[in-house]
Figure: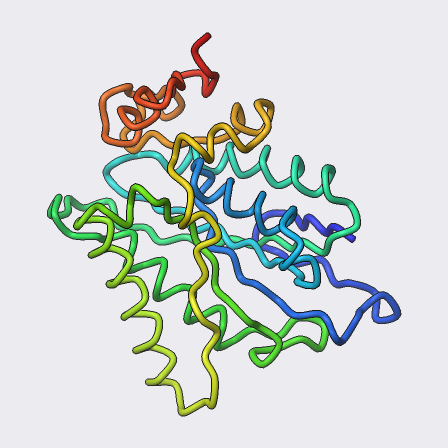
Length: 239
């Protein structure tokens, strides 16, 4: 059963439709290829078939000005998933972090925000009788390429450190939902080859768009797509 609420709201599941034995995964979702592929795997891999999925997108309103493009992408991506997997429970919600000031380029700023917000969601999760103890994992996109990239490893470590520190600060609990990277054994090229072409076209990866909605073609995210044979401006594979 797929439930797509209006922005920032959650649609309740009827009480008689809730399977109390089902577990949850919180998926921190940007709208980029890695996160989209991670959600695709969570919905197609047999080992996650008993999990409900709570998809959360953070609007990062900063000097890179990509939040509007990501918002539009999420508005198209979530209906694609709920239409394609109508028997799965998928809920979607959002939050906004607005910090329009300049930031140090070397600081993994959005990564730390993702970790902090994931802790907030886990700590306060209360959805139709499901709560913290029903959550097994917090998921995010992380590729095999990232694992061999020192900068990406630093961002992953920072995200997880903030997450666990915040949960510990809120009080001792016996088991924390662990971080899960469904895409970790795949390269970005393999993820692009894995997801359907119509799903790929809905993704947004550019970090510094032109006029809000046009991929710049020059940032590291755009360059990585070019290397995989994808035009970041159209999100289509080059033939």
